[in-house]
Length: 369
Image (cartoon, rainbow, N blue to C red; front, side, top):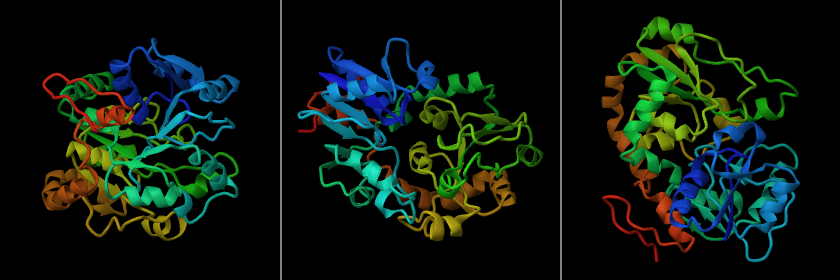
């Protein structure tokens, strides 16, 4: 069995990584190959076989595969051969409208991406709420499996404490420091219509962050991959740019609170139970003109929806009160969007492929059918 994995056009991350690590354990006899962007090759463990993303060798690997596992569109010119199974894990619970549901897209983009959708045999869904949205948005008529997202298994793992401690130590974050992760999403018009290097302004000023909150707070910035390296964040001792860190799931464990706007990071981070703040400075424009939402985030938010930097810093300064105020809404949010995040999503996906997973230490054998 020849398996080819892809994550975000050649990274070692996300749902394909979690499925690979589980599948490699139970089927080491299979041939496992990853598509790797040359600039990201160092992120892959040395024993992982890779193929450069995008060229003739990449296309040959896809066309020779028995199983393809990807978390994003493979917008490449390749022919899926008869008998190959293509499992699309996707990469986020949608708040933002996607694919055919978006308000606007560059000419020809959706048609190009839809060619890849036509190759899919299976689509994973992170939760019940997302299943009909994914089916409609992609126009996908095949089976959708509500497995949860394998990448989130680590967030419920006994290994989580060690990952947190090791990563904080490597980033120089003391145990007593409150680590704040900021994950702003991308804006379609700034990416597709900029005509050059966009002027992405960081909406949280690191110097003001430290002046208000003190030196016992650290600000970690994680930009979207479409924006990374196209933004010049201010340099400051309280700012740690983790945009190039290979897998965001480790960062969720390392930090103490998340600030986002409309990114799907909110749904994954909620698995941790740690506080969420929403810095929605352009909410009306993003919702009504630029992209649109599947549901009203402001109706029952799991954390405060804030419009200004001053409001964000004030919420961080009074975080205990914020947690108390929004706890009931947070619990409802988790019940809706995190019900499948029980630490066994990768097992369910592997079993979906017809492989029975042996019991994990302290666990039990899992079988779908």
